[in-house]
Image (cartoon, rainbow, N blue to C red; front, side, top):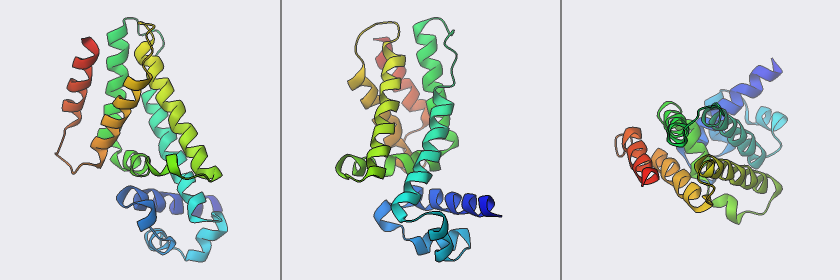
Length: 180
């Protein structure tokens, strides 16, 4: 029962944090979504910040698995980049909840100094470095700024209301800019 309850709480937290900002989500909100007592949440997670970190980590692992699960043997540069983008865009299309959870507090983890927030920031920075590695794999040119812009574009689009910018439009804009 323990691990199932913990997963129910995490699922509820992911839903709450993807729908509202960290500051606007209370442990009571999460307890109501998980259909558990608030005290049970504290049994598994000592604080709201710890619960957010766990929920964010889980969403982020899904993003990385989906996006970087591409073959190193894809060959041509644009084919590799397009496959990477397709994976990223598909993640946006199929798991907006996780991407919203990741993106909603991005500015916060650059200003917060606690260990959990620094953990989140470091994981995100490593992700951006991996994106830069995919972009610069064939050209050898530094791509850190471009990777940051790419992740910001894809991530920000997850926060837009449905239909504001389609994943296909995002992919087209990014691939056209890479080709030139």
